[in-house]
Image 1: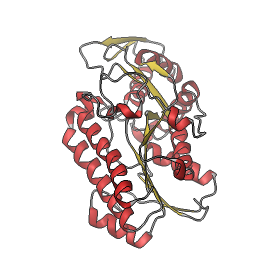
Image 2 (image 1 turned 90 degrees about the vertical axis):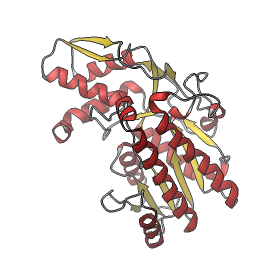
Image 3 (image 1 turned 120 degrees about the vertical axis):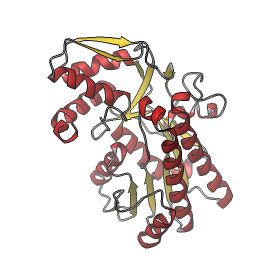
Length: 315
């Protein structure tokens, strides 16, 4: 990408989108294009076609989509399936039609089988049953990864790049209790327990499942690295992770420390845990020369501090 390249960040108000804007700005890219949902509904194929025809973005980061935790996935599976597939289809079609140079699409670690060998390798996709609590979302993301391969194969191009980051976190995460992912939800609940002076709090599940987390700015750096090294990438998806996983119990304890909550943490085992463990094998992408920079302790402190500073806007 040249500093003057026209770069479209889809989903710029979200966790990853904001990190992308930050890193692109730091690196001196001057022609970054954004649209809010009110300005452009990415599920509307005609509207997306018109946008690409007018703006002619050369590079696209497709960080827009409908995401959420266990509760949201169980409650709105049809919305997760339809919205994400519609966004992907609209953007892919327009990018191909108007000859965008590159498009980065983001899959999800939930695409891999529930009982997948750990760490999860790219070739494990579609080798077993998915976790039921996120099945619809996982199917939508799998469709996107396969679409990248299909467009590249049919049109003899390397236009579409598929990255699979593990659970992202950082400033501007979604901290709404019904729709947040696990780490943001923990931070929100522990903060509320702290300000209400509660002596104990009950969290979902056993606390034993293990998860890998990637700081949002690291994911943005990996995305730009992929754009810059697209000619070295094969027509497949690439895992990007931190290489370390933690139990939900450990995460809760670290988040409690970051927020300042000193009460007792209990676990409601009548609530679902989700998959037992999810850690990615990122060796294929790491071999190209990218490395994450922010460890969980540092990233969690940044995230907690940001949440406390901005809580009035969200609660």
